[in-house]
Length: 350
Image 1 (cartoon, rainbow, N blue to C red):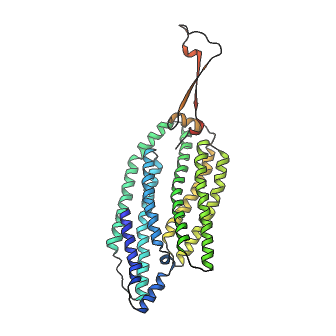
Image 2 (cartoon, rainbow, N blue to C red):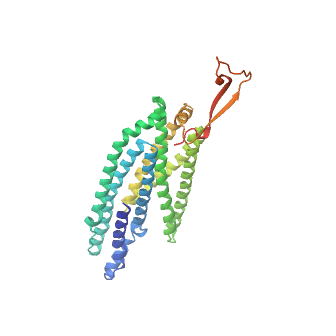
């Protein structure tokens, strides 16, 4: 898939930069300069789009391995849905390229062949096949993984529900980590790339700095979650919810800005990232409250003792006060009490 992304990026660069470099005459070149000064082309947003997709493939690889090793069925199903959404990107990219080519053809009277069948069709077809394949494998392993994970946590239905809520919440945080990296990359790129010395430039750079501050808050929220959930800490989860509310406000502002940019001739691909970004953020906020409700319900001790992994059991033997030699009617165990003490911070690790 990364090879397909590179091919699409190369085709896009050939359309934008090679045609801009060719001398078609004063009128045609002036027309091209006008087109290439539009926001999506001036900032070369296509480079960012392909960076996002390459990062997604790396993230998806780790996300898939994590689902298999941790035997988490919901995560396997989510991978299938994500692959289906990524397949839609091919159609959106065709729309973006077609709009540029049409603009150049009608405005500048320059004919360009984007070669959709050579570049876009193989990409879309491969994406759909991969999404269908992932769906097939997810369906195959779904029941097996579900049976294994629930065997490990026992037959207590209440504990199963509480356990699943926590797993879904932490899975959502993994998805948010990808979007955080995407937003951080965009912020740094735009901060370095935009260099126009005017009022809008100053305002834009200020907004970018604010956005980068929110990204730092997101990383802090990730750290808080991975401290709060194993410890079942209500204060830390309340702090996380406060941070996440601030993040949601920023995301909705980002979404509104993406809609305005798309309506005014900007990139529609940005909406392709911001819409699921906001949706996952809202679901995360809801599951954060649900996860807080699972605290002090016995899940930490119950699952920690049953899984018996990523932590150790310390066996402490204490002499009883009145020691008596063992006899035929008594067992040496009667003269000792054995306490299983579990490390609290490692009782439940996902």
